[in-house]
Amino acid sequence: MGSVSIIYGSTTGNTEEVAELVARELNGSVQVIKDIAKASAADFSAAEILLLGTSTWDDGQLQQDWEYFFPQLDTIDLTGKKVALFGLGNAQGFSGQFVDALGKLYHKIAERGATICGFWPTDGYTYKSSGAVLNGHFCGLALDQENDRQKTPQRVKAWVAQIRQEMNF
Image (cartoon, rainbow, N blue to C red; front, side):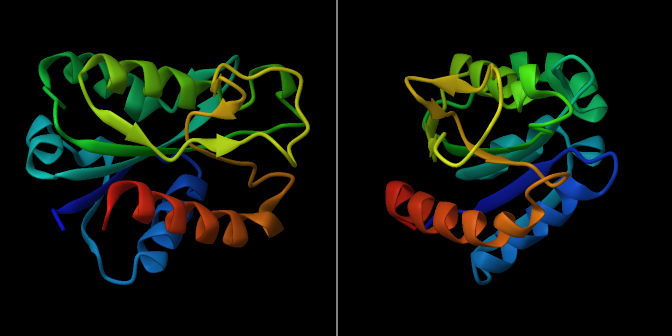
């Protein structure tokens, strides 16, 4: 198994909490857990497997530290890297942009050559629209810590099992 890093952006602490939950579920397989506010291009290059997390803000924007880092992604070659994404949103308060930032992150990471795993079913979610849905699935694990927090542990557990299988680690 290659080196595994979790890089996340968190404003209120919810995405950090989920990143830590994912790391615990991976039972010691994660070498690095880092806030994107403290990350560099070298952090992306060093890992063979990247788990990236963001929340969605306002009218579908990336979390502000991801927004700031986003242009640097254009300098990072992710060819050959396995990446899985997780995103937080509010399906009731922002139903028309539910986890849109997850979709933005997906498109940028795919553009940089990564192999993206961990697509997640939309079943069990109630929202109007999402820029993170591709071919009937979210492009990563979608979570709503505002309205469905109680579902998070089981969703994370199932998603981690799924990405372990898809990524062979």
